[in-house]
Amino acid sequence: MFQKSYRRFLALKTTHYRWSHLAPQSVGHLQEACDKHWSVEKLADYLHCAPDEAEACLRRFNMSKKVNGKDTTAGRLRQAVFEWIGEVSDADEKTRLKLADELAKMVGNQLFVAAQAGDDLLKLSMELEGKESDSAPKSDPKASEDAAPKWGPQWKD
Image 1: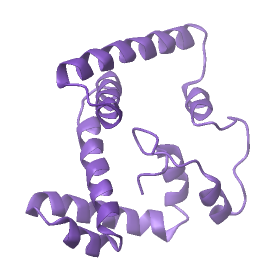
Image 2 (image 1 turned 180 degrees about the vertical axis):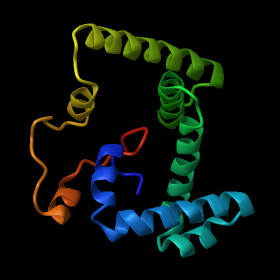
Image 3 (image 1 turned 120 degrees about the vertical axis):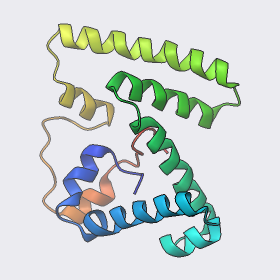
């Protein structure tokens, strides 16, 4: 469930049982696992997956909570970068904070320039996903679900 962009998730939610029912149910299981300190094996049983996949889902769920817990878009972007840096490097927290701040400023500068130029943020988001903004969605929902890039809410798997 964490392998779709928000845009793809929202598009699929209304037409797929997997995204309208099973994904929210899985999020509920992940929250319950956090609240009740379940073992990875118990969570894997509830998610119907292997323990290593359940552990990865729990890690991404906790990361998503940290990112989405921020009040502002800027805060969420900065936290997403901070968490992503932790996934790809062994840097200490101070270094991660510095790198996240620098990258957030670079992204902020590019967004400022885009806003000054009158760019559409939805179009920009779709371009960053690797999609053409004016391409029509596929008529076969299953085909479009399979063809979608494997993205997580805050980072690429």
